Image 1 (cartoon, rainbow, N blue to C red):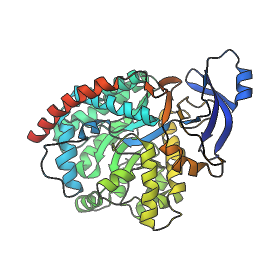
Image 2: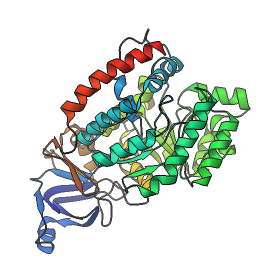
Image 3: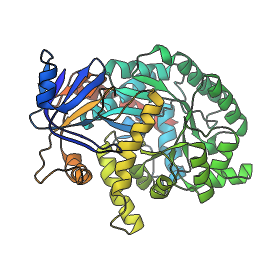
Image 4: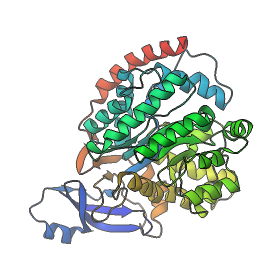
Length: 443
């Protein structure tokens, strides 16, 4: 198909802006980009979509999320409000993941995927946990993702916090899924999941590293989110959390560390040296009152720092806007935040996804995957390559996503989802949420 009469933009290392532009898609790839007049003439017989001047840009990528967090919305009946980060984990998230059933896993994913498509998020790097429904959980998610047609990378977070039987089951679930993932469609890939350093022993980490090497996988885990991570590592192991992960073989160019809020200069050097990827999650860090990651410094050191939501929602627009304001506020510098957050969302998330999926993702160029969105934005002031970031942050980020395309397939057009019945899944969700919340109270 051809999408024409669009304002084509992309915020890669070299910003792209084509007024009255067009993209020619064949199968799952972008095969040509240029002025509408040339593209329409070159591919006369192709089906076409008139963008009517809307913005056409790459689909957004979420480098760290939790699809299972859906049922935390409006949660009631679990007791007093947590007072700190560890209480939030123990009283909310660890109760929620223990209460999940296979049906709840599938439904929470469907609800989150609908939100992602509406927000123009076309690739998700998910981090899953369901201690009482481990076996088959990643296949359940993978099947749901392929049915919906979105792109995702999956992992199961191994932890010792629920006993060694579940630790073993978590390792086995990662291995089983990673061994078979190449037989799935190109939409689904995997990493080896770990919860966090402070919930896994050296013995467990060694077993996970050996298992991941056997299936040639990198890791996805939380790291240095709260102060506890470094404090626990120093107390138990005599070294900081990054040093511990490096020593045991977790770090590397295939690994994503979510957060990295409390990292020293020496630890940042280790991340840079090992080419480990980082996912910055500003809204979650603010919500959990754990601090603000040194994004600017990590970027200057050459670390690939992308942007995630940590399950707060699947809207990368909200994450972008919040992150810019956070870094201005923390740095007390009006110049801070904008370029760094644009780099994290549009350049580094594309690098992370491309590294995981082995294809060009998150860019508009020849042979890249056809993950595209149309946005109802008609610039009220001149739009140029020089002010493109400002239009994205203060204009496009506030506009409605009209259409979402993943792998060359239309998942939403004119604001209507094609593969998900939102009313139906919301009705089912309210029923399951009540059951899940009751289980949380008793856990």
